[in-house]
Image (cartoon, rainbow, N blue to C red):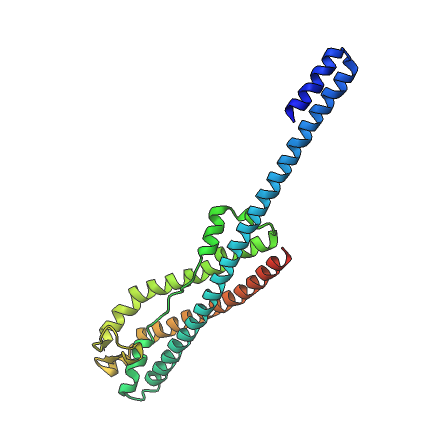
Length: 247
């Protein structure tokens, strides 16, 4: 092709036809420019296609993470409700001074429990490393960021506060009032328990009742935050499905 154009150029120069040569030269420049523009357009289309594939992969990973997180949050809510049930049983017993019986042993120890918030964030971490602008929809991008940076972080804050309260307040008081039963590593949690050193001391411990009441409130807040997270998980999952269907 280059030799073909060179022959035309040489012929025009030889003929000394300046006007035709200039027209030809301009045409040749235009062909080169058009070729470059076409090449750039093809390159841009290829890059956009790669970005689309990458964003779809990340959205699918985020969706899988959301499904896992929802399942875990539901399980944790169930555990939190069991803790609240144990707290209510213990408080009812000591407030009414119903007397000690060994059926309370499990509830004494379960009333101090709290589940940590387990969740997957690999899809969001990948998105951050690749650049959140990879998600073209501003609304979808903001929804993802709000879920991970706000809703999930609020839940994490409550869990961290629970951990601090458990270590600083609950464990010292619990070990002062109760003897924890010996257990084996593979023993089911339901089989664990604790016996009061002195039941009357437990009943008359204002600090113990106060901590249990405070702990119950913390478990309620943790449930509410998980319920909010589940709702937002479902909304984001639906938004992702819609985004993928439209592509």
